[in-house]
Length: 463
Image (cartoon, rainbow, N blue to C red; front, side):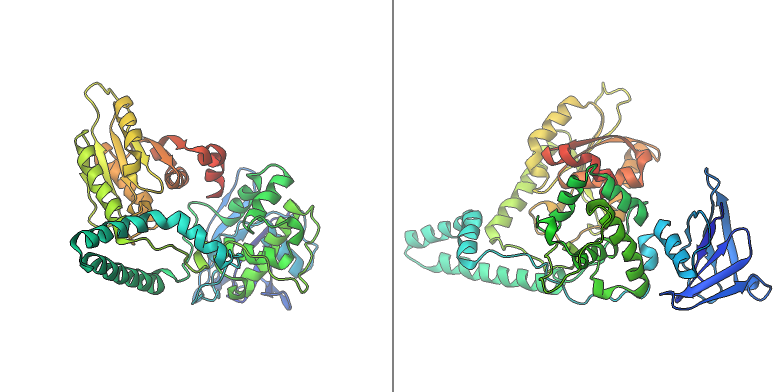
């Protein structure tokens, strides 16, 4: 069996070698031209093999080749049964079965400058207003009933006027913050210790049946029937989930690679049959969170006064239970946390790290009390203010979040200490990231909640 070894010569060419011969072939991005090169003295000085390895199955793999004065590109390796295809088909086969890291093909991708509508059907105004009023009426009643009563009691409109002006100013500040800072397309963060093909295969393997795969995939299209899915719709979604952008912003190489993902999708949910093309139908709306306009509901000042007040109440109560609060000096990169040392009779109990979910750590007071009562070892409570119904716009990157947790373990228990991690809701995501990036620091994982009961096995494979 011959092993083609693929690597890049220039940004506009792909090259590959038929092992162990020294014939090199290349074609342009779309395979419109091809030419043979002999591995001669004129070509050899321009190539430097960084290192090579032989895998368990004796497949030769080259991790990286360097070309002087040319950008460094990731190498793709693969295995093929022969090399009797045309040049373009051979490159197709190599790319189709190779591990191409998602970050390696972003060269030439256009940068989005504005958000893109998801296309989700919105409720008509006569339904939206009553729904929003029902769901959000309580904080607004809480904001205006007390000043209204004070105005009636003092026979003066001043309390009501002051409250109204304060809310208008606060609303203006929030709107400006959203428009200037938050309502912009964001760049997806790199996958943790994973490559695209591994992620894609795990994505499909997370559902064993074709029906389950179709249901899962169409959930990203707001549960539209599979019969309405067109090839263009699938391409739009896959362009987002792989490259984090629109299909119009992809580079030619990204479009080429996307074709194989579409074929894989057709194999998994459409019996290997090519999806129909869109005629005059409207595109299916799909979720693309990082490039959509930010949708939010404004809350009054009194709402945040209550949530921030509950945080200070929790700090006071939890310190009386033996926890000490460590406030970070850089919320954009590090976590604040609570630490309770081990009890005297703990022996060699491993530390327990609890990561709360949406709503804030104060809502987990009863659970934390039970953990503190039953666990004699040390306990770390990670605080996530950006999912705590509080005003907080400093969000550490995934890498910084994991580094912060590892530093906390290092400082209190040593460089090689393991911990049992407990997570609920959003906290389950951080547990998944820890398992992928730092498995040696994880002794056990506990996922709490109905969603985690159903999806905890998917978190490792898909997130």
